[in-house]
Image (cartoon, rainbow over all chains, first blue to last red; front, side, top):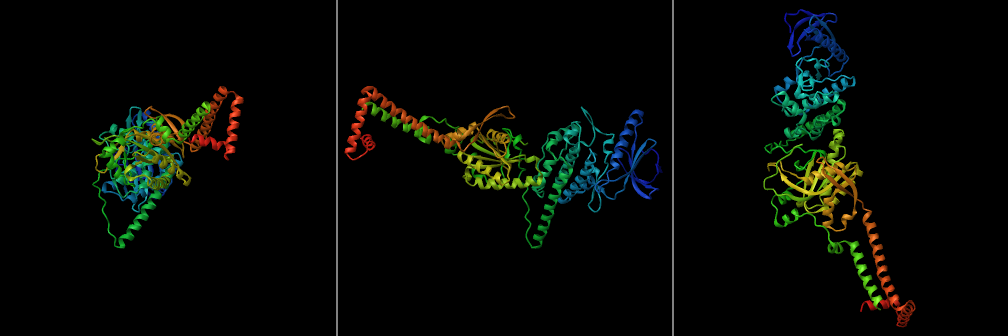
Length: 383
Length: 242
């Protein structure tokens, strides 16, 4: 990386070092032409001539696409270029922390989490409209500014990483824990992959748990593909049920039933946010009125996740509905009386002739009419 | 999907299961999902109120509700039909009913639920049903026949379908015009049987006595009855009364 202390890269005068990452070093630099302070992200180019050519081509293509994205929730790219064995990007310099650092400090409030996610969804929607997919949405790529504004970083260059995750089908770009199932499988990805990744980020903000944790990359990849999440409200009772629906939709394994559009996700998140804010206001009013806060008992074990009709098989357990009391029937099922044993264990009996004519009105009419008519016929015949 | 162990010692019971599924639930916007879910719960609260609370268990599914009814197939059918009528109020439901095995599951620490083939087939049937349609399985039709013979006749064959476990299910759909048609058919068959038996008696008599003698005997009886101040038919009825 920075093998010697750099004073200048391109036209930019290096002021200091901001950080080091997998791709290279990020410097604080000054643009003398515009008298503007920027963040200068450098990427070390490959020594191999052919690899370098390919890398160079991809870098400029991606940086060009990212440079077109000017949006309040995307870090703006001002300029890009190449000098010696370094490619560089001059970007907006932001004061703040990334979301990963913020999450390490402690749990985020539900409303704050939703607010961050909806801002990121807005930014993604804007980029997706212009045909740019991020491919590596994760807390480390979301910058939080002091006034609560969230900005997506590394647009376009996220896919230039050198430590890409490798599968049997090829190289996959991104961070496995936040990848979509199609990305993990090495299949072509589109905007819906970013939506899945944002769903994972939101889930982790809401619950404070790693959704697709695993000991190693293959295990994480397996979890991303197969593990169904527990609704966030089951882990954090403050999460409204509507947010459960939004997260569930963003985390659909099949991209066809996921949100198709990040704006759509953003709209739903805004609705959730409005609900949360109004709830907060109501709670404040109640608190001022002197009402007591009741602590919810969380010692009860987590109820199982309710599956959809399509995925229910014989050994799929459906949880009891929380809206209805089924205690009486459950008692009957668990400790069956002799009468219940008879009722609940008997298969339907076939309806035979006598039951049919005694209980079914139509056949009974036919039977009785035939009987009377036959008697009359016999009487007439015998005089 | 979460599968769970059955509760040890919990017996298997046979029950009717009505699965009410919100059509195309996963594809709808989240705000609509929340609205439809609340609407479904309201509908189920009203319709399930007709059932004895000790004979029904309500279970949650991601896109609907399963109502397990112990020993009341007629009530189960009525519940599903009433719930489907809510479709007119903007709740896009489809329903599937099956009669089959269910069993208690869970550790008994707040994670209780039910599992079983009865629920799985009902869910599959509901998945197969078109919006606002109710389909029932052959086993439920048999249970309905057992509970009230003749009621199964209102179930019209609606085809077969193969579930994810490659089992083929014969399906039926209720048609409320069928009972009236069936009643008319039985009335017509009864009338035909009456004509046939009485006609056969008349035919046998004519063959034995000859047509002229038979007609004279009938006319004589008619005159006797008239002389006694009553109709011929009243006379016949008096004879039948012995």
